[in-house]
Length: 289
Image 1 (spheres, rainbow, N blue to C red):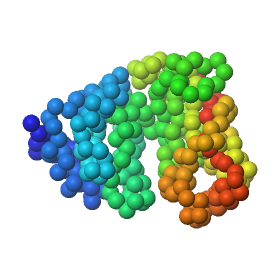
Image 2: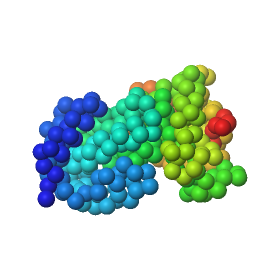
Image 3: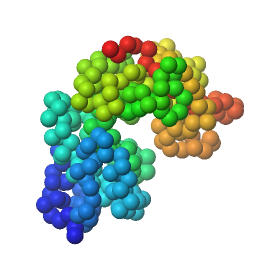
Image 4: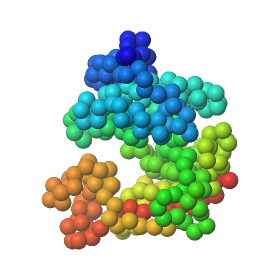
């Protein structure tokens, strides 16, 4: 059986509440109406089952390249309605709900800016938001997870509960904005009911913004330097290429790398002479208890 018109109406209603681009709505409605009725969408809302549920669901849906991700987006938006109830039950303010779920609008617009297509290519990621594992708190996102796998700071076990920090594309990395985000994380994510793995023992970030090589390419007062200075880097991966996506709009050919900003020009010049950038792993220096 298919989901049908009532289901579609709920999906479109949520899309409108989240201010998704109007150009997406017709294709989204078509995808929603033809979704299989057997999908375990309710499991996307539970922190302990969101990840495995997504694996089951994704196996039954078209790859995002086949329908611009509209089936995957419809499933996620259907789960968001129940996630809103989860927020309400846990006393999480409404503005945090909308800030967190604004990722759907942001992801669509990022992909459109990069490719010219209205497509949703982040189904693999957004079960974190629907499952109440990742929250947008001010300018940053914080994910409740375990520390491993990968390199860890001294004294932290792989199964230790941590907060993973993510930097949205629209983040403002000023001192005031960063301090506000950490204050919100300390307040909200200290609630035991929101931390599936237990009270976080550390705040960890894995990002190209923590690449040590950036320090010499950025001016004093740079937002990226301000952010990176909050972390003690404990591992570097010079082979990491994620900066191509976020700094160069996905272009990976040296000769074609854009030079619109001073940072783009500086990194491109470094790469042209055989230098590397990569990514760093860091632990927040600030005490979070």
